[in-house]
Image (cartoon, rainbow, N blue to C red; front, side):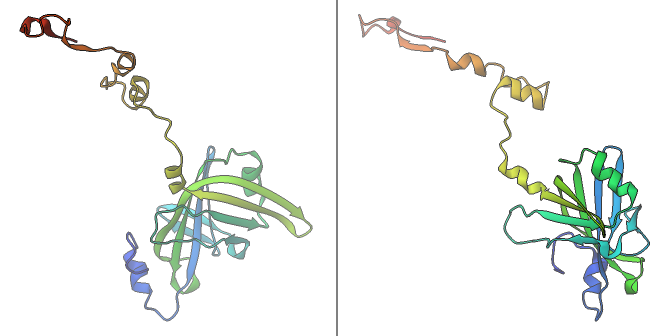
Length: 203
């Protein structure tokens, strides 16, 4: 992991320590605001933002990272949440909203951050809420942004598609005309084949 591209230098230095205190922080971006929580206790400051501690109530599935370019999803579960988080789950439009997770190293198990690294970035896809005597639990599924590589762009080599990309680009303005365009070239008749005047280019 120490050679992973973009790894925080503070994390790379900490990997040699006998004891490492690892936590996970998650940022969920909703229309009315961002929900910031992490797996520790108390508040954590990361990237100038404050994450609320959820402790062991926050759980993640394994975050897979391979040398292959492929998409791996993520499942997050949060139990015993307060009314604020439950309101997000019940009222916010969460589908296709951005979600980002970070691996965080803290100093001796406290909420003092010593290093962080982005581990997952994608979009929320589905959410289920279960309610039992022990409390409510939210399970959230997310897909990696690499899933976009498997989706067709729906753009074509047409003027309309090019105008959608850049309204000032008119390089495809004649494409539609070329579909049924008939181009005549060469000689105009069958007589006097030796006469060079019988040959012309009409286009």
